[in-house]
Length: 295
Image 1 (spheres, rainbow, N blue to C red):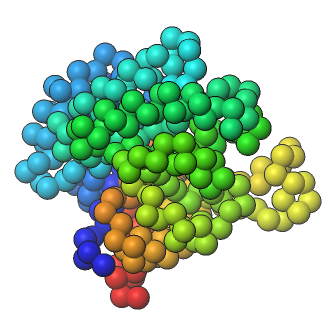
Image 2 (image 1 turned 120 degrees about the vertical axis):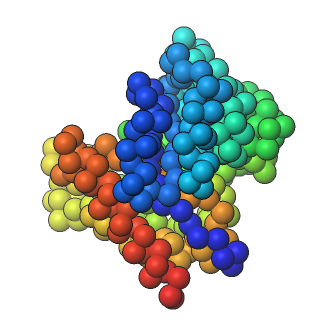
Image 3 (image 1 turned 180 degrees about the vertical axis):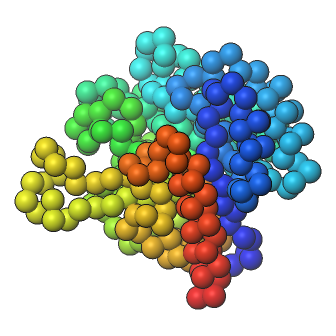
């Protein structure tokens, strides 16, 4: 093992009016890293200016930006896809300014097409992105959220399961392309994340702190596509996964990244109690980290 402590932080929406002020409000709660994220595009954000402001706040405290994320569908040909592609390019160029070496996001996919049908478009878009990133010392972390898609069709993302990962890594065997992994997206597909992680951990560049409750009693009676919800996205500590085991697996394989909590999904802690849920999850994950160090 490297002995590196896995930092626990949270995601920050880069499109809010003042992300730096938001980080400043969270720092006293004990967050150890931040992932700066953008939904589909960068808006009017000047990344160089933002990076300077962020590092002025974080560098004296030794708190890193773990990654910069742009989450959209860059494989289509519409205007928004173009903004997502441009956003990814700018994020790659700006990541070193933030002190980050990871840019994360969805792969995108050709809408309403099977995953294999989107692979040529993935190669056309992400081949040049990976080459651009390599010149900057940056790696690309592919988020594992299905966004409602399946093998046969979907609107957003190819990289949501191991069968797709094999196709993606075969299509572009670049060493600087890996995964942004979380337990939740696997659990709601009835994959055991603890059984999966050891096989893929060497490809994991960044981890999202999000979990799930899986209601097997509902699944037995109604299936996973009925009118009764069988899954709920939860903060770590409120879901079914044992995050002490997650830390243990990551540490055993010399994982060099962070775990950043992904909020805004929990059905109990949201709105006015969102930050309370994040702080509870932060403390739970730190406790799991300590337990993992003793195993």
